[in-house]
Length: 162
Image 1 (cartoon, helix red, strand yellow):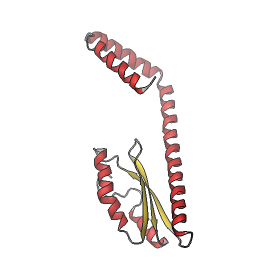
Image 2 (image 1 turned 90 degrees about the vertical axis):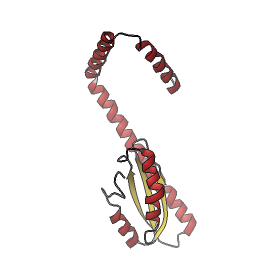
Image 3 (image 1 turned 180 degrees about the vertical axis):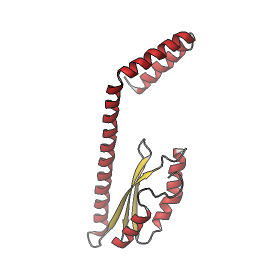
Image 4 (image 1 turned 30 degrees about the vertical axis):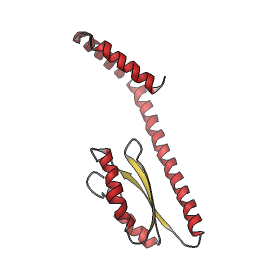
Protein backbone atom coordinates (compact mmCIF):
# COMPACT_ATOMS: atom_id res chain seq x y z
CA UNK A 1 0.00 0.00 0.00
CA UNK A 2 1.45 3.35 -1.02
CA UNK A 3 1.53 6.53 1.08
CA UNK A 4 -1.11 8.02 -1.26
CA UNK A 5 -3.35 4.97 -0.65
CA UNK A 6 -2.95 5.30 3.12
CA UNK A 7 -3.72 9.02 3.00
CA UNK A 8 -6.80 8.39 0.85
CA UNK A 9 -8.04 5.74 3.26
CA UNK A 10 -7.49 8.08 6.21
CA UNK A 11 -9.44 10.84 4.47
CA UNK A 12 -12.35 8.48 3.76
CA UNK A 13 -12.28 7.21 7.36
CA UNK A 14 -12.36 10.79 8.68
CA UNK A 15 -15.60 11.43 6.78
CA UNK A 16 -17.19 8.32 8.31
CA UNK A 17 -15.97 9.15 11.81
CA UNK A 18 -17.41 12.65 11.58
CA UNK A 19 -20.90 11.08 11.57
CA UNK A 20 -20.26 8.71 14.51
CA UNK A 21 -21.63 9.60 17.96
CA UNK A 22 -19.30 10.47 20.86
CA UNK A 23 -20.01 7.28 22.87
CA UNK A 24 -18.98 5.10 19.92
CA UNK A 25 -15.82 7.15 19.35
CA UNK A 26 -14.92 6.88 23.05
CA UNK A 27 -15.47 3.11 23.01
CA UNK A 28 -13.21 2.81 19.94
CA UNK A 29 -10.51 4.88 21.66
CA UNK A 30 -10.71 2.60 24.72
CA UNK A 31 -10.23 -0.46 22.49
CA UNK A 32 -7.28 1.18 20.74
CA UNK A 33 -5.69 2.04 24.11
CA UNK A 34 -6.15 -1.55 25.32
CA UNK A 35 -4.60 -2.93 22.12
CA UNK A 36 -1.62 -0.57 22.48
CA UNK A 37 -1.08 -1.66 26.09
CA UNK A 38 -1.35 -5.31 25.10
CA UNK A 39 1.25 -4.89 22.33
CA UNK A 40 3.49 -2.37 24.12
CA UNK A 41 6.51 -4.70 24.26
CA UNK A 42 6.24 -5.51 20.57
CA UNK A 43 5.84 -1.83 19.67
CA UNK A 44 8.83 -0.80 21.80
CA UNK A 45 11.00 -3.52 20.23
CA UNK A 46 10.04 -2.36 16.72
CA UNK A 47 10.79 1.23 17.72
CA UNK A 48 14.22 0.20 19.04
CA UNK A 49 14.96 -1.53 15.72
CA UNK A 50 13.92 1.62 13.82
CA UNK A 51 16.11 3.80 16.05
CA UNK A 52 19.10 1.49 15.51
CA UNK A 53 18.53 1.55 11.75
CA UNK A 54 18.55 5.37 11.89
CA UNK A 55 21.87 5.36 13.75
CA UNK A 56 23.34 2.96 11.19
CA UNK A 57 22.15 5.17 8.33
CA UNK A 58 23.77 8.21 9.98
CA UNK A 59 27.03 6.31 10.52
CA UNK A 60 27.00 5.15 6.89
CA UNK A 61 26.29 8.70 5.74
CA UNK A 62 29.17 10.05 7.84
CA UNK A 63 31.55 7.40 6.48
CA UNK A 64 30.44 8.20 2.94
CA UNK A 65 30.97 11.92 3.53
CA UNK A 66 34.50 11.36 4.83
CA UNK A 67 35.33 9.12 1.85
CA UNK A 68 34.00 11.67 -0.66
CA UNK A 69 35.85 14.55 0.94
CA UNK A 70 39.10 12.58 1.18
CA UNK A 71 38.81 11.72 -2.51
CA UNK A 72 38.13 15.36 -3.41
CA UNK A 73 41.02 16.60 -1.29
CA UNK A 74 43.36 14.02 -2.81
CA UNK A 75 42.27 15.02 -6.30
CA UNK A 76 42.73 18.71 -5.48
CA UNK A 77 46.10 18.66 -3.78
CA UNK A 78 47.46 15.39 -5.21
CA UNK A 79 48.74 14.40 -1.78
CA UNK A 80 51.23 17.28 -1.63
CA UNK A 81 49.76 19.05 1.39
CA UNK A 82 48.70 17.62 4.74
CA UNK A 83 45.06 18.35 5.62
CA UNK A 84 43.29 18.09 8.96
CA UNK A 85 39.54 17.76 9.41
CA UNK A 86 36.91 18.18 12.08
CA UNK A 87 33.76 16.03 11.81
CA UNK A 88 30.79 17.35 13.77
CA UNK A 89 27.11 16.60 14.17
CA UNK A 90 24.90 19.65 13.72
CA UNK A 91 21.65 19.54 15.68
CA UNK A 92 18.94 22.03 14.74
CA UNK A 93 16.20 20.37 16.82
CA UNK A 94 16.26 23.31 19.26
CA UNK A 95 14.77 25.51 16.57
CA UNK A 96 10.95 25.68 16.67
CA UNK A 97 11.02 26.18 12.89
CA UNK A 98 13.32 23.71 11.06
CA UNK A 99 13.66 26.12 8.13
CA UNK A 100 14.90 28.82 10.53
CA UNK A 101 17.60 26.42 11.77
CA UNK A 102 18.75 25.68 8.21
CA UNK A 103 18.66 29.38 7.34
CA UNK A 104 20.84 30.14 10.38
CA UNK A 105 23.31 27.46 9.29
CA UNK A 106 23.50 28.88 5.74
CA UNK A 107 23.59 32.57 6.60
CA UNK A 108 25.46 32.71 9.92
CA UNK A 109 27.21 29.51 10.98
CA UNK A 110 28.74 28.43 7.67
CA UNK A 111 30.13 31.90 6.82
CA UNK A 112 31.55 32.25 10.36
CA UNK A 113 33.22 28.82 10.25
CA UNK A 114 34.56 29.64 6.77
CA UNK A 115 36.42 32.61 8.27
CA UNK A 116 38.20 30.47 10.88
CA UNK A 117 42.01 30.51 10.70
CA UNK A 118 43.31 27.83 8.35
CA UNK A 119 39.89 26.98 6.88
CA UNK A 120 40.27 25.13 3.57
CA UNK A 121 36.86 23.58 2.82
CA UNK A 122 33.60 22.68 4.46
CA UNK A 123 31.02 20.02 3.61
CA UNK A 124 27.61 20.16 5.24
CA UNK A 125 24.94 17.50 4.84
CA UNK A 126 21.33 18.47 5.47
CA UNK A 127 19.77 17.02 8.60
CA UNK A 128 17.81 13.82 8.40
CA UNK A 129 14.28 13.74 9.71
CA UNK A 130 15.60 14.07 13.26
CA UNK A 131 17.18 17.52 12.57
CA UNK A 132 20.73 16.18 12.92
CA UNK A 133 23.12 16.83 10.06
CA UNK A 134 26.84 16.32 9.61
CA UNK A 135 29.64 18.72 8.78
CA UNK A 136 33.21 17.96 7.78
CA UNK A 137 35.48 21.00 7.98
CA UNK A 138 39.00 20.84 6.54
CA UNK A 139 41.90 22.93 7.88
CA UNK A 140 45.48 23.46 6.77
CA UNK A 141 47.17 22.54 10.07
CA UNK A 142 46.50 20.31 13.02
CA UNK A 143 46.60 23.38 15.28
CA UNK A 144 43.85 25.14 13.31
CA UNK A 145 41.72 21.99 13.28
CA UNK A 146 42.21 21.53 17.02
CA UNK A 147 41.27 25.17 17.73
CA UNK A 148 38.09 24.82 15.66
CA UNK A 149 37.34 21.51 17.35
CA UNK A 150 37.53 23.16 20.76
CA UNK A 151 35.19 25.93 19.64
CA UNK A 152 32.76 23.39 18.16
CA UNK A 153 32.95 20.92 21.04
CA UNK A 154 30.09 18.73 22.28
CA UNK A 155 27.33 20.85 23.71
CA UNK A 156 28.60 24.06 22.18
CA UNK A 157 26.11 26.22 20.39
CA UNK A 158 26.60 28.70 17.60
CA UNK A 159 23.45 30.39 18.91
CA UNK A 160 20.40 29.36 20.97
CA UNK A 161 18.47 26.50 19.41
CA UNK A 162 21.36 25.26 17.29
